[in-house]
Amino acid sequence: MEVHLMAGSQKRYSRLLSLAGILLLVLLLQGSWNHARAGKIFPKIEKMDLTKFPHVGAYVTFYDEYGHTVREIDPEKMDISISINVVPDRLLKLKEPLSIALLLDKSGSMKDNMSHLKQAALKFVGLLDKTDKVEVMAFDRRPNILHPFSYRKSNIRNSINKLYGKGSTALYDAIHLSVERIYDQPGNRIMIVLTDGKDQIRDGSGQMSKHSLEETIRFARSAGVPIITIALGNKADIKTLKTISHYTGGQFYYAPTKYQLESLYESIAKNLTSQFKVEFTSPYPIRDGSWRKLRVQGQRGFDVGEAEKWYTVETPSTEVPSR
Image (cartoon, rainbow, N blue to C red; front, side):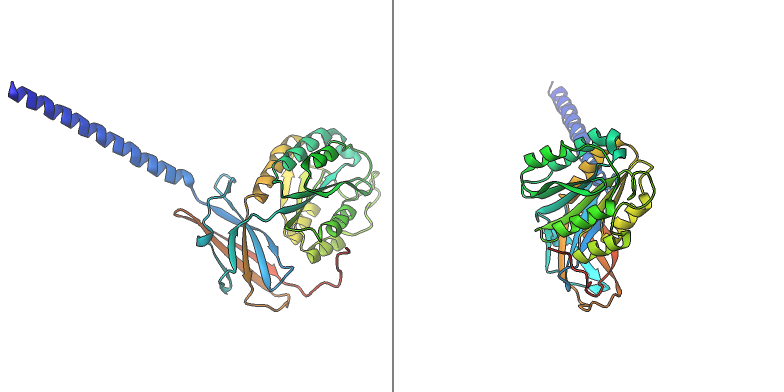
């Protein structure tokens, strides 16, 4: 009888050890899965602010392997260099308010896309913080300010709802005027431009704007305003929109149809509100037009990501944005 009890106890003990082993294995696998699921990180230097050079600001967004923004970056584990290692003045999670100029094409070709554009723009505004300012400008044959820079999102949404499609496309004039208006705005200044065509008179006989592409880009660069461009459909002037975003330090997006607009604007809003800002004093304080390479490295857990960006500091432009 006593031997029988001991054998039963041993069996129960062995069973408990087996269950504990299985549980430990599950926990280990779960930990490995969580670590694997975190994946690699891919930083991107979205914008550089050289308006107060040699004091430099770089805006950085971190993405995972699926293109989603990553916010769990430790600012204390960020590292930067410009040819030589530089001690940053500040490394911070960006909480700087945004000043956004929202430029929307309302020419005749946009008529069938207008309801989806409104819906996308309304969602974009709804994702911004209450401290972010927005101006809405629509353009056809001339720029038209639907609502000046404001924190009042309800009024901004009302102005977006008044959009309708008609007329030619004065893209460059709209950007030029928007640069003038955003120049003195506080915080992180961004321009977002959407069009489904090119700068031209409605009958296709020539350019609609008084300002040229080169003049428009030079003006935006002198003001330090990056321009995010969105091409809608295959009739958009993709080459020109890519040129504008590239030379102003912005980013280009392509929406094949109106049905991608809402998710695209949502992605832009999340990117803008998930940035880090690196501030440092350049070890090369001379505006000599030479090219320099900025390297930024960030860390999340054991995952490290690195990005590089070439930039140049030109001599001050003689063209100053008008107030």
